[in-house]
Structure formats: C-alpha cells, structure tokens
Length: 145
Image (tube, rainbow, N blue to C red; front, side, top):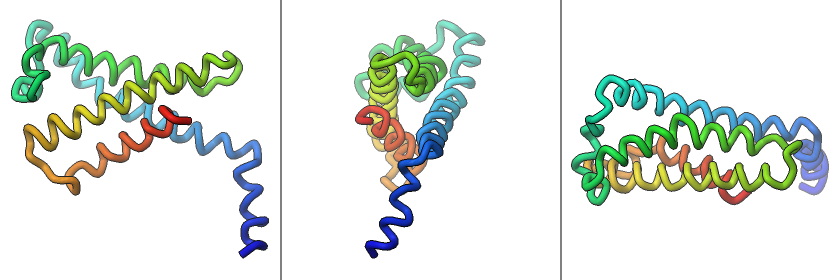
C-alpha cells in the first residue's frame, strides 16, 4: 500500500491538480446559472408575479415576490460570479473570501430548496433530491475550502 500511496500521492501535488478545483467551480457556476435563466425570464415576463412554487413554502410564502427575486439573483449572478472570481489567486487573500461567500450563498440556497421546497412542498424523500444534494456538497466545498 505504501508503494501505491507514493505513486498516486504526487498527482494531487502537481500543477494539474488545479483542474479538479476549476472543474468544480465551472460546473457549479454553470449549474446555478442554468437554473437562474428560466427564473429571470419569468420575472421579466411578469415582474410583479412571484413564482408559484414559492407561495406554498413556509416562511418564504409570506414574502414570495422578494423571495423570487432573491433566488433568481443568487442563482443567476451571485453564486456563479463569486465562485468563478474566487478561483483567481491573483486577487490575493480576497479570492478565498469571495469563494467562501459564493459557497455560503450556495449552501443557504440549496438547504432552503431541499428542506422547504422538496421535503416541505413536494413531500419528496432523500432519494428524490440526489441532484440537489450534489449541488449542496459542491457549495459546501467552497464554503469551507
């Protein structure tokens, strides 16, 4: 086993190891951005109408229009922007803070979506939110990295 550890241990220490982090950054940014696009289109088409799926959500249904705008801005702009910008080490120590902020917003967004919408409104189980859990895990990575 020691020989195996020596053989593969150096892989993560190479300059190519940065590809794994950037693949996560780009995938997470793309997926959140992709989820925000239909939301912005809906808000442009009917700016005074909240999303119908937010109305039955406990707590968020009380301010459904604001929640609709917040989730759209988070998914379309904030999370992708912070995750991508946070990957550029040339901006110094601020890069980690920006990346952490993107991770925090992503974690909050996914926890709300999983617990309030999927478990609460749709009454789905843990096996129904595999995709959402992967986005949560990716967001957690950037929150604590």
